[in-house]
Image 1: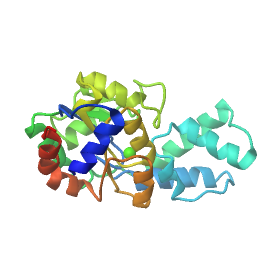
Image 2: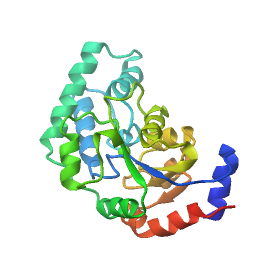
Image 3: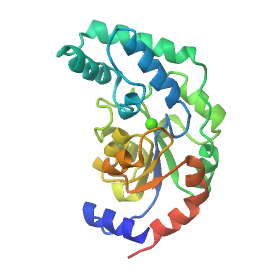
Length: 244
Ligand code: CA
């Protein structure tokens, strides 16, 4: 762990980590919703006759819907989708997703958020999701953790991940610098967004992708689950607090 921190500090040229805030992704981190998203995408795209795999949608996680559709159109037809096509396809995907029911909180997520709060750190949600009922749902599943002031959603940002904007905005909402926060992410593009914002990024591999994909995206630390993160959080916190 000390080696990992040294590498982060030398890459970012920061002198130390002074942890104040934890920037937390939602889908695949707080909710076990990625299997639903991946299936909905697969069904929406395959129904157009476009060749795709279920797994590839885990690679695109964090992208905006429009950019995912463009990527697939360019691969299949050699052109971008029109606005009308994007709207129609994304609408279809959203309907398929909604029909799958409510995603359950990720095992370990509630414990982890409790540890973050008990430690006196500020938790900030950073998601590309734009569901209007988001805060209500979060307050139900994770009571008293997030407020509108500590959430970055689709309504706040112009660029999706892997652009660092969502995490830079998360830092702003927490009122901290990159060396005063950590990111918790499950997707390669989300990890890229966190590390491009120069924030120490913990990847939790809650999906089907190989660990290598998350490490190649730049994850500073890789853990197998939110349960592991919850149980190791005190140790990680102590290590990060150590001064060099
Ligand atoms: Ca995610």
